[in-house]
Image (cartoon, helix red, strand yellow):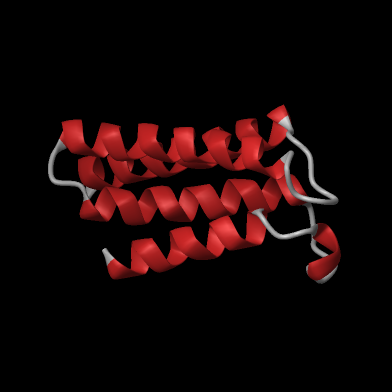
Length: 105
């Protein structure tokens, strides 16, 4: 749970600072995908049962949307639907990977 909280804080800070404060970054969409896949994997490790897992994943999706909304208030940042799509793809990837792991291992 502590690791999930620290990772979530790092993602929020990274997404809500002006771009000029950040070093040059690779593909923005890949970073969104990877960050939310990691958060989803950690959340699924914390979840106790399918209903709680679904709640965590839905909460991450809402958090990604909220971050995008807040980015429109940050200098050098803007709202982007493609970032939300990358977040959702990362969450979905983690959910499918976790399901396959549980099913086959």
